[in-house]
Length: 234
Image (cartoon, rainbow, N blue to C red; front, side, top):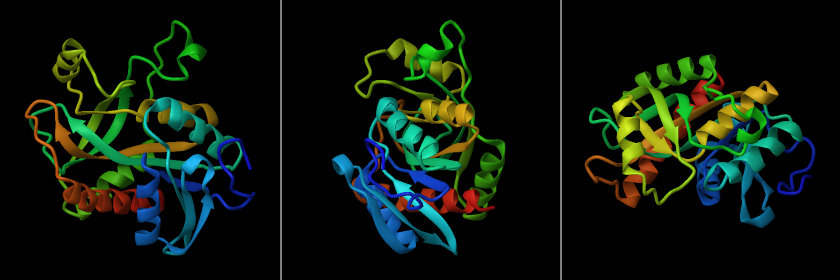
C-alpha cells in the first residue's frame, strides 16, 4: 500500500495499462480481463487486476496530465514492481494524413515541461518508447486492419492551449498528435529500467476541428486495448 494506491503486495501485475479515466479502466477490465478484482479505489482512481489469455494484467487510471500520471507511475514501478506500462488514450491529430479513429504509436514525445524536468536541469532529455513494444504494437495494429502511424507526438502540460504559434511549429516539424501524458511516462520508464509505450486513438483534429462523438470513442478505445495487450505479450 502506498499514499495513492491501496493495493496489497502481489495485487498489481507486472504489465499495467494506463487509461487516464478511472471509469475507462473499469470498463476495459470488465471487457477484456478474466477473474477481475478491484485493487485500488483511493481518491477514486480505480485500478483492476485480472488475466488476459492467462497473463496477469492490471488496468489502472492515471488521471489527466503528467503530474497525475507521474504519481501513479512512480508508485506502480517503484513500490509494486510494474515492468511494462502502456498508456491507452485519446489524442488530437496535428497532420493532414492523420485522420479521426487512426491509431498513433508514439515513438518519441516532445514537451515544454514534465515533472521530471528539474532532474535534467539544462539537458533536454529525449523521451522515447520501448522498441520491442513499439514493434509489436505496430504488427498488432496492422493485423487488425487499423490505420496506424508511428512517429513523434507532443505531450502538452495544458489542455486549454493558447499557443497557436507552438502548435504551428509542432505541425511543421512532423509531430503527429498531441496528448498530455506520454513524455513523463517514457521518462520514468527510462529512469527505472521499465518498458513503456503510448497507444493513442485520434479523437479530434486540431487542423480540421473534427471530433468523434462519445459512442465512437468507446469503440475506438476497444481497438487500443487489444493492440496494447497483444504488444505487451508478443
